[in-house]
Image (cartoon, rainbow, N blue to C red; front, side, top):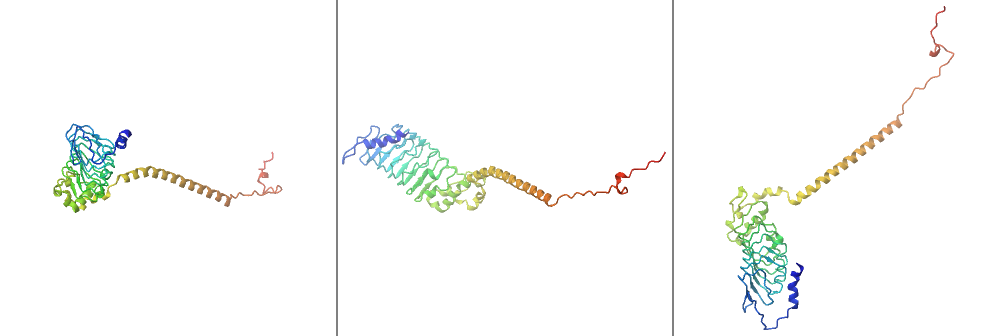
Length: 314
């Protein structure tokens, strides 16, 4: 994996610089134009061809069989402005696949088989204006998957399997002008409340926004997303977030142990207090015992031990 990432960089260093007016030999699989365009469409390619012409500005790789984009796949094309990769059966894109494309303005990844994107995949594309992910299998969209893309103006997400969208996805696209969302099974629950609010104030940026319908829950089925009011999501404020659940799970055992410790300490204090109080009461109030009186032996009337009954005389 490391070798595949460093290989384009090594080739860039070892390849001779292009002299002014010099031309590069075009690959046999592609058709090269004088305007900086390389057309490799429908050539049964299974990997990105190694193009060593740094002056290429448009690269057409659509309708091939590339199911994976490796790291640094386009590192030798620093002037590339447009890249078309639609209809390739793409299933996975390495997080560093677009490394080096700092001036790329248009990227077409439509009609592929993408189910998820690694966070930071599009991070190098700071100059990107147009991005198409239409016709894939994306089930959700997270903020870290796309942004930040400060110059992105056109985003196409239609015909995916999107049921929700992260609350900060659109916040990280400040220059967005056109957003295509048709052909997705939107579930209008709490996870989509931010998108519904955005549609109410930006409906003019979404072609056919009035026809975007909810597929569930039952109370909102076939209801236009742009018409859903804030009151429909009032119950969401009382739902527990995943972080709340984690805190509750962590606090439960600790609170139980803390209560046991407190009960033990309280019981020990009460026991010690009672023992101390008992000891103090014994010292302050000694038991009084009667002092025996000395009886005179000469007084037989007062000495019960000498008062024997008199026996009758015989």
